[in-house]
Length: 303
Image (tube, rainbow, N blue to C red):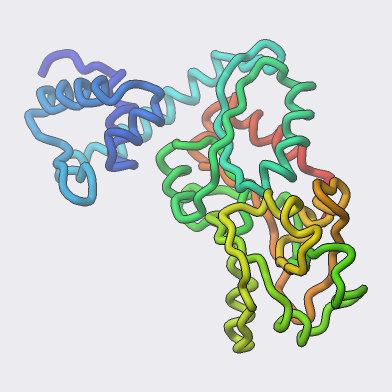
């Protein structure tokens, strides 16, 4: 066997973990053809296909599975050594960081995050990805995003989370609603028309509670995003349900008219909004700094 190219090991590990040439290229910040070229070199080196494409992606051969643990350890040791040798300087870095947020997160969290990072790292590039809760675990596993904030605790080997905000759901409506005053009864909740947001951010707890209570809302309008609500609710008789922090924010910054927040006439469990990342990233000084600063930016938030 000819001299082995250690540069091929990170590609092998990433492809084994993602089963995708595209995801491997995204994780390593290289092109897909370069991944295909590197895989060709590995196949020639070991005289084995190593990864075979099927409907589930690039599946490892028996030899690839046997090599993975050793190659993973080598890759982690190399990453650790590089991280120690290459110090991250927030004041001068122009590095790109990718953060997945829901549209509510963009309205509620992003201003705080930007203000904080403008002070501690004015030259970095923050790329915000629209959150899809069904793909969130996959995105972290594949390195598609560096971190994400969502209202669930994501399960999966290697995924770490940190609570950002304890939340609960409330009702938001026009301040001058003609039939709903300073409190909301169950009869009013059922009788009044609602805006329902079909979000990809995972806010389905209220629907689950209503289903157990055998209660249906009168849905008048369905929307893909929460952020448009301040423009729609004033001047209408529509109600909507959303987390309290963003609801209060909408009230403080009215767009087309005053709004008010009322407690729901039924109990919905409180929940944490969590910052997630993959523990693989703990090998990177820059990413460890990024997570720490995100927590600092959001540490004083209260529902």
